[in-house]
Length: 290
Image 1 (cartoon, rainbow, N blue to C red):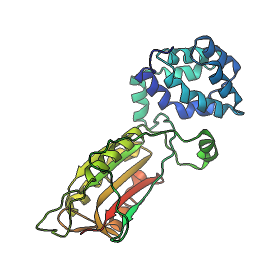
Image 2 (cartoon, one colour; image 1 turned 180 degrees about the vertical axis):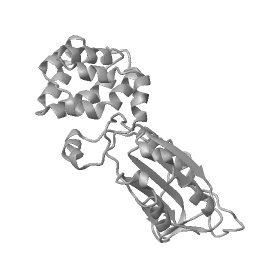
Image 3 (cartoon, helix red, strand yellow; image 1 turned 90 degrees about the vertical axis):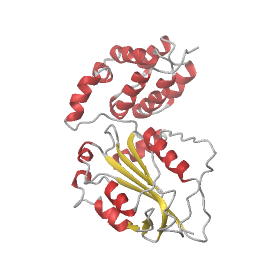
Image 4 (cartoon, rainbow, N blue to C red; image 1 turned 120 degrees about the vertical axis):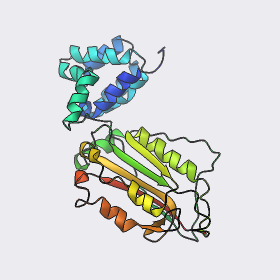
């Protein structure tokens, strides 16, 4: 029986290099037999992996299993790589963090486990069903890898997403509004839960997340990070705006409107060249006031 999961540093090493491993790792009977001999895999796991028809699918399935197979799984996997003449992958996994940092500074970020993310924009009208999480409900935000078949059938058409972090995520959540400047805008019940869920989800997806709450329209503009120089070294960015709103705009806490066209333009290729040809995801939750 396994003692516990894989050590965190080993899990992170596998995660950083997973895209490279999926493409280059050869998962054959010799490698699987080595892991079986070390009691890292069970017979049923080995059969399930080898049943996949391609090496990429086998690699994907193995990489999903290894972090759950105990503290010896990483060293056993590295030994199996050496035994199967895949020393270069073993070297990649055991590369020192100091050297990784030096490589990262050149802009060549390590690979991350590819995760399928759905992007949604919510705009609630006055007569639509309003939805928010109850403030007392538990926050559960599991992030699961996409299915191997989905990844393999879409990876050639996907954006590059190998930097670590994947990018920067900005969450602006206006919950309480100025009762004098905007008396018609009620507090957004559950807003605190919504922005915390977003923070957790994007953190799990390896984004560096900044959350700002209760900003005026001017401060919302000033906190948009389109000119951040670090965008050069990451592969994407996320902007989440949660507030009351109208068609094409969201309210600051002072009752002034921030135009969404202005937000989108701030991140276009002309105004934000460091994110040129990189995916920029916008999540807008704009509930009607009143």
